[in-house]
Length: 310
Image (cartoon, rainbow, N blue to C red):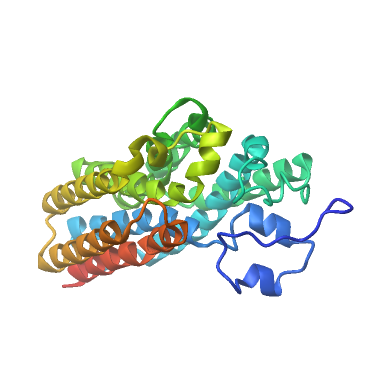
């Protein structure tokens, strides 16, 4: 940590998180770069992987999603969420310094040097690579195919009013990977699941962006929250409605039964609750609703796993 830089917890990290409480002071800035203090990110990256693995189990007539694959997806999600976040912070370090919520991040605040952050990205990518090569050749190729989207995303907020779409294309990639890992190929069902996860990501990240809407306007950062403006509730509702429609089609094509459909209904009810509670000017509620998508995603995964078992 550079001389004079203070250890700073971040405003969107849960209070009492393990990084702030237990990690050595020298490690905290790097753990914050990787978002270890904010686990919601890797949960949201992981859940489409698990959905896809469970959907593949249903289609293949297996009793449960492959446990080894699910464990690999967990490790890979943590590593690649960290790598992507560190890369994003490197690209955005000047913009982050102009936004209240992000100005104390390790790079704009001087807690981590650019050279150290680059080395940290490479280390996390190595972990992700070691995970990826455990799968079949088709899944390995599919994993590499996502790299371009990941590299592109941080630049989109400068030129594109819906950068959340590009984020969704990257974050939802696991919707393809679980199926590819089991079958060594793709089909219409996982593609629809992937598109559903893209729409879900656009919805929940629009909610997340409400925290920064005023600072983003000053800094010239584009977002779906700014684009929707006073119609943000309708915009999120449209994204979530598209999510449910695409998921229903994916389940039908995979031959899912009643447990999966009931889980989809419960997932939809959770999304409807988010829309009902959403307020464009309430940043604290926006963060709470954004985080609640982990629970929504786990409800759907549990239902898909139960459907495979039944």
